[in-house]
Image (cartoon, rainbow, N blue to C red; front, side):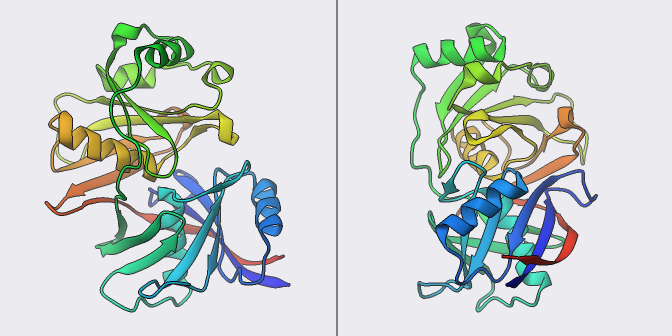
Length: 278
């Protein structure tokens, strides 16, 4: 059966310089096995399937698969799928798009030429055991004392956040992916003397256990990091994170805390638009 399909580059306005997501826009009738097989075939960090909503108030339901399995929530697939849904005629019932997914209902707002999702609550937070910090430091090729702070920032994916002393330290990491194993590790470091329009932080994400050694640009991780950095490390209410630099991407994640919710936004662009036989 021919189904509407798009491949969207997320967190960038420049095609092929962001993080791609494959979106099947009329996935009704596909089995779990069909979805998992197609996600393995695309071999992208995530592939999504848009379905009719099952709860009141949602505009659509989204299922999100990595090559290794299903996720309850992920950020760049949320924004990329919302972009594809709007581009193909989707109209929200209210002022914001409401996405149903495994993590519940996710609000998505139009913010100029960007879409932004409301960061979901953390399902795991708090400090990371010293033994785990030591193990992760060794896998990243740094000393334990190079880690300024570390905390769980899980909001679907089981992210742990590591704060290093500088953005350059983040860029210099050469991780041992085998040693990282099934850990889902996000690393962040601040830039100094930031001018208007330049990023405040550099972020990298390592998820080898999900078949994604380094994710180019990661919405869920940035959402978790934003909640942590705002609460404990005096991050600005609005800031920009760069991600994907070492992968020759120019990802930009826009974080805005409006006092009620933290919004994670960015631009998206459709690179492939057509149909797929599924």
